[in-house]
Image 1 (cartoon, rainbow, N blue to C red):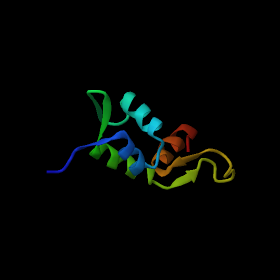
Image 2: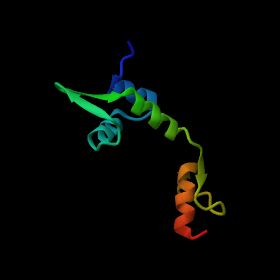
Image 3: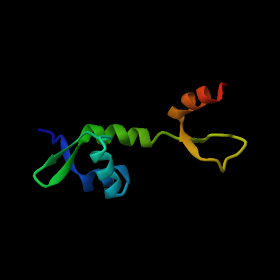
Length: 85
């Protein structure tokens, strides 16, 4: 049987994020999670989905200004819509 839940620290290692960031995401509902007794657990499927989103390549918002904040390729369509292009 596959374990569907993992600790925050295990999720942080898989996501390459600080534990406090994974905890914030769990509390705010960004990751499917549950509080059992006195510790949080994160769903392995939610971790896998977030890991895929984080692996999406980054592109500059303005190709003429690479110093500007970056965004994911998934955000590109939304950004172009805001710019009217």
